[in-house]
Length: 177
Image (cartoon, rainbow, N blue to C red):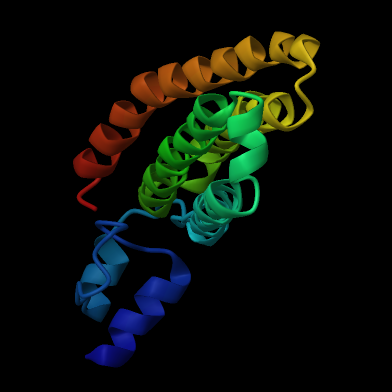
């Protein structure tokens, strides 16, 4: 019985693409209609990216609180630096949400938007938090011009996630996954 199940799976003949425990007899395999194989996106890269962004926020925050404390206080930039760290932490979270969504998504339909969304969040971290770190450490006011572009990248990422994320979840639930 297990052999017919495996043969049917290898042939791509599945009644429900997300049921790995489904058993199929030889007679049932002949009556099932072929379906596209379901290729899931790996959540690994998004999880790694989220961990890197969050881990760097910890390291940068600790460096600022200890090694750079007197310099930041002297230039009255503690709040600016801390805002950069907070927003970096906040925006590590979407990478974990995207990882979960990618693990439930089919490759063909959702690879592009999850990559674009993660790129927007990463660009936001680099431009928003990065410019605040640079501003706090250099005291060069013109660097502050970059910060709003990071904020726009964050807003675009959140908007994309708000529009596409629920559709992905609904599509996954509808497919029986």
